[in-house]
Length: 203
Image (cartoon, helix red, strand yellow):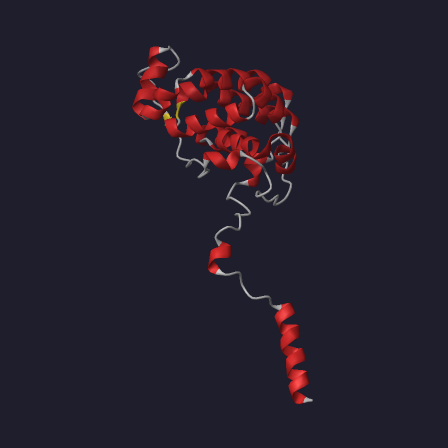
């Protein structure tokens, strides 16, 4: 009888506390989240942002990949040569690190977890400041070339400038962005709003 009870108890414990996956199995389990500030991906881009986003994304799309891949000095010189930045400008430094996202991770959205809905309720003045920061970003802020290259790739993954702007304006929460444009849209919002000068103006 004691043996029977012990066997039953062990079986119950085994069901309650399943053994961990073998080492080789855990390596193929997909990551379930990346560390993104929810406020950056739940921001409500109103129609007031249409022109500024369209202009910025078109500008970024026009920068040759070879320039972005050559680094910050080459990018700064390209801006100066194209009359987009004053060579004597006292630039703000973007100190926010770029997201550690593999290009292949733009496909699908099943591994990104929705951690809550935090919609930014901005006043008209705050929206105006945010729009202005996006308009002035290239002229006033030294954003790393590597970060702008990532943003450019997200825009391309979403189908181009017009589609990217449309998706940003149409989706507010992280869940809505995931549904509308997958992880590429989430990452685009996070990278853009995470730029130091933009973040300071928008939040």
